[in-house]
Image (cartoon, rainbow, N blue to C red):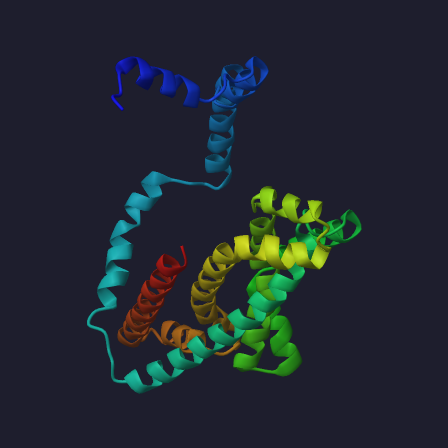
Length: 283
């Protein structure tokens, strides 16, 4: 059968989408319009807040320029690095890594459980708001305070650091887990609810599978943060390489300090590359 331009045009017209309702078109166009009045008003307000913050924080470019010489002098003391205690550094880095692994696993599991109570599309209001408040309280307390709390409870060592990382994770990663569950596509959830699926089935088959890639990605991000955080928790005796780092700074042992920093950078780089590889495979 020969296809003519007329038949092609008629087929294109018949297969074209139906005309969009004017009200729906207006709603979609409104979503891409920039609210000019509020936008133009917001720019000066944002600049005022930024200037107020610079002034209140005593941010001074001139002072930074004057201190560049001192910064250069400090950096020059870090070279050459002294790897005479390389065995001690490696042992403490392994301890730091072990702390981060255990803290991440415990923190991710507990954060996931808390996230079910802090996601608005899962938890009822009477459970949602208290869970959010608890996470806000935990998130507002620095990890070093938790570390001091657990050091006083269980003594010096990595166990206190693990407990501090686990508790600190509830406030930060728990909120992110909850928001990942709230951002899932409502289509499959609505379809399951329409056919009579229970709440557990909706969560198990409709919400968690959609949020799983984000949950894994955020867990890897938590692990990277815990590796860096473990080096800080050691400052208060909560295990890891932080105590050795603090000792080197107090003793002005710049060569040893430089070796520690180089080893930490190497460890964090390896973990970052491994996490990036895993993220590419799950997305």
